[in-house]
Image (tube, rainbow, N blue to C red):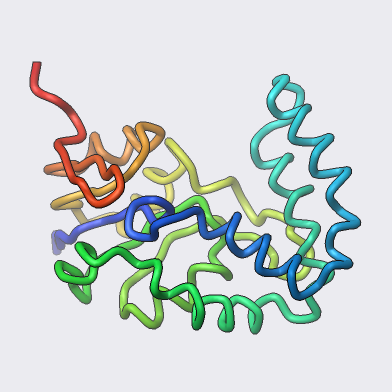
Length: 191
């Protein structure tokens, strides 16, 4: 059976900001001891920018702050109680129950908001206690790999993203839209 539905990136697409960055600062405000991880995070960010570390390696070090939360999944639930207002109005007006969110953000972080919205989720598998990745960062080509693995007999009718890093997923959709703030435009401009 061939099923079709809409798919959406999350950060800066249907959510106004970057949820991982927001969650980081939300956590630091409640667990200042997590700042002990900041020097290593800054160092690995520099190494990543210099091409000496992968994005996944950098993010694993950044996610070490999770070891200081005393319950990351519960904290993520509370985070979304406050931050749910950041979901964009245009998305809420068009949302369907069969929508799929596909994001590089951690699965544990987006699971609570996707449950509240009643939509499906594919995201980066990050251990909420250690910050270690289970597999690859769900970004770029990996989004297509994960989509085809989880939904092998499905098609994307419309895909929405704020970033050209999602071109691989946009290319397999029937239509794709670029999101800038609350403005939507064709992902691939006609020449």
